[in-house]
Image (cartoon, rainbow, N blue to C red; front, side, top):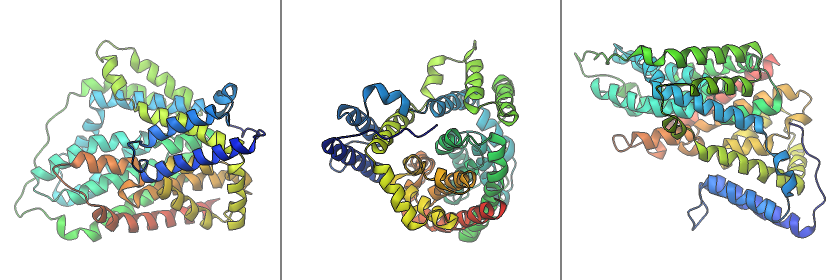
Length: 414
């Protein structure tokens, strides 16, 4: 999507744009506005309306600031993943891998199952499905669930870096960069794979004393699932993924798959619509308009000048900058703010890949670093409480090592 030329604004409108932008990004950073119950989605709505109300973004220009390709891809993938969820696809895959495991095999099985599924589907849904299953298995094997829950969160983030459809920020980057699906996977798949092995090694090292099952405990087989329920969704998803690899625009291919899955006699459409994260879609629309207003007011240009002063064209500095921004304001707002930078690099292609890699892997640093982490923590309650320091103990070494490997790989191969 080409960047729109800035428009001339009065001093008052420019000041309003700065105030709106800073207030919204404060909420993105804190999770809510101090003293008020305004969450990130609410802030995006309020900020977008304010940008139009103060005519920082003219009403007739609003649609030009919204990247509908990203919205279509995100919405379509939500419908596809929601259909798979209702059909029991994720449970079937997870149980296929995790049934009859010995306790010592559970950690790598959880890591690579969550990572692989997150590579092709939105990682948030993978976490929603994996957490109850991991709790059930650890309970049956009489294992401490904490290491395995942290494994779900970190592995889902790491695995999602591999493809355009792995997480929302990658969908956004795929739309702006026009990097083909298979090329994205070719460059970032190895980063995801290496990251999963690193997560396995680090978690095993940190929790080796908590991964042992009681002596004589036998693995308990999990119940069978009706495979016939997932036949149609599995065929459609396979066709969609093959379309991605064949070079069909991801938004179009995902939309075709979602449309086919809506033609059904068995799935209640209302249940499927409940699987869609409408708040995230609205958040994206609002964020497009907020950043569009910031561009019109010249704020983004000022940030670009600061970036030039920091010499972010060096991939190492760019990686650190992305990591800090992603943990400060969350990864999607950070990507929206930094999307203008890759065009100024001598190698924009590599810059886009670094933006994807760093913004995704940085999400493993803290519980609040990504939505997937929050989903794991909240879904595990009240059975298991994951404290901030518990997560940080694993998040820091996993984030630092995976980002270092990602930076080294992209610097070496591009």
